Length: 195
Image (cartoon, rainbow, N blue to C red; front, side, top):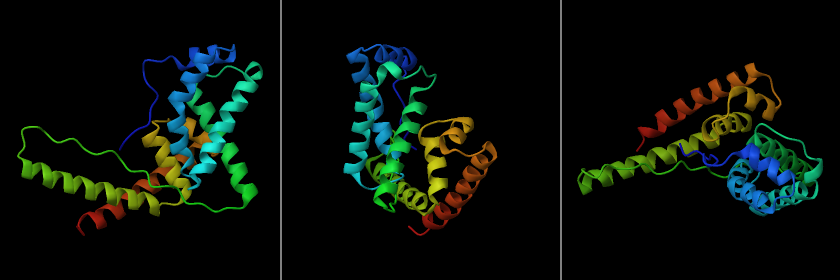
């Protein structure tokens, strides 16, 4: 599965502290590092791309305006994801919309250079079919299971972080992920053989 991660070369805590002290380049770097992560995360709650972009924009404007009152954090990604989730859910609730998430498509697989062209085409077709089956299976999951799977496998979050972000206890995280993996296995197995 494709994973959205911040670049390992940045020290996010140091960058956060520099932003809080008014460093504009640090703020711009935070935006560049996290805008896509936040957009993909928000797509679990709404298909309204314009609303998602507006919420992300508003979040960063508010962060800059209130930077002197914002405290330190040990996980910038967690802080931003929790903040954007609250903001988006408030907007959706206010507008009384029920939204399904956009498709999150896993990345394409790589083929070995020594395989023949025909084998590469066959592998590519199988990978495309499997990715499509996985995307459809993810779509069938209940919203909370989808969110837990996204945070666990696309964002590489630990179970404790997930429990805090989703505002549930740790056992519920285990239950959601276990249930989601069981559902995914069932749906992907059925669809894979229907090629």
